[in-house]
Amino acid sequence: MSRDPDRLVLFTDAVVAIAVTLLVLPLVDVVPEAVHEHRRSVEVVTGHLPQIWAFTLSFVVITRLWFVHHRVFEHVGGYTRGLMALNTGWLFAVVVLPFPTQMVASYPGDDRFTVMLYIGNVLVATAFQAGLTVLSYRDPDIASKTDPAEIGSVRGALSAVALLGLSLAVVAVFPGVSYLALLLLFLSKPVSRIWSHAGL
Image (cartoon, rainbow, N blue to C red; front, side, top):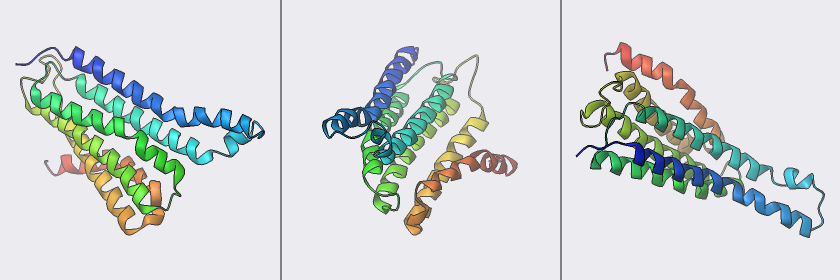
């Protein structure tokens, strides 16, 4: 039975807010450590640049995932067990992200396993998000009656999954590329247009 999705959206937003908050906690801990070790205040920042980089990267990633999730649910008028399962998988991937984030802060950028774990985590979240997009487009019990999803959103979601998969492959072969492989996501719109011209 389909139901109003507002409760599901509110729960999802709350979990995402907690995940974002968890990202900053390791940075908060470095302040009393620096004071205890009698380091200068500027060293709180200069001595923890990898942690700040990791926090910034994951904050942008989670915020971007949440923006897209929000756009998906603008076209959702009800929810089913299938939608709840996909949304739970998406939440799991988002909640796990602080773990590889801490690894990003602790290991150098050319550590292939860390980079692949991080991009793989983002890929899983994006794949679940694509599943939500496809389901909201194809299932009449989920699609909004007044503002249904369009095929363009499906192309965009699948393009993001494909490009993240390509990013993972690039890092596997060329670990020195590191997190710059994520810049391939900027090709999402051109790839979507190619699929459109191909009739897909």
